[in-house]
Image 1 (tube, rainbow, N blue to C red):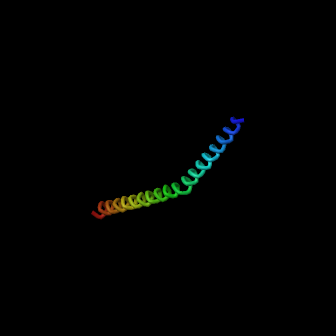
Image 2: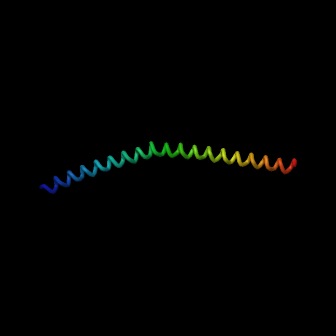
Image 3: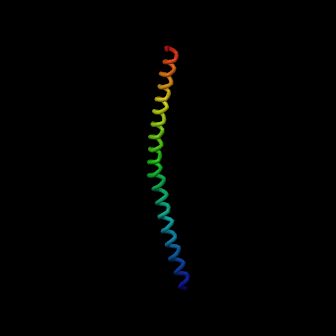
Length: 68
C-alpha cells in the first residue's frame, strides 16, 4: 500500500516539474526572443549604415577618377 502512495507523490512532483518547465519555456519564448529580435534589428541597422557609407566612398572614388 505504501508503494502506491509513494508513486502518487512522485507523480505529483513530476507534474510540478513539468509545470515549471512549461513556465520557463514560456518565459524564453515571450521575453528572450523579443530581446534577441531587437538585437538583430540593431545589427541590421548598423550593417545597412556601413553599407551605405562604403557605397558613398565608392561614388566619391569614381568621381575622383572620372573628373580628375
